[in-house]
Length: 78
Image 1: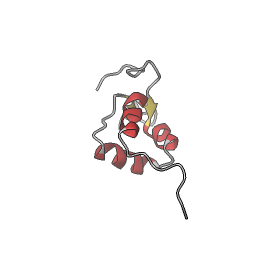
Image 2: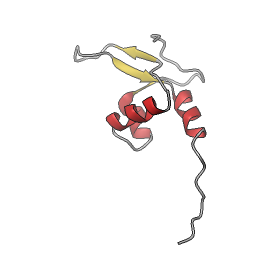
Image 3: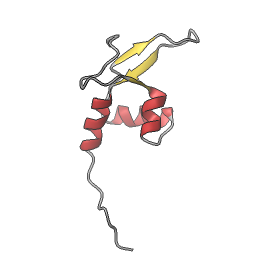
């Protein structure tokens, strides 16, 4: 893991909570989702509460994983 604060596409790395929120998940669900898709944190930063370091995620990695999902039909017949 690097300590860089920007991802492959130049955007800032995000915390687990921020990444989870962007996908409508809680952090535990996001970590499971990322693990199943082979996404690893791109970096870390010290935790202000002196606990385990906070994982930082690259939005480009998340975007790539989302692009690999099968596309859902925009209109589904009832």
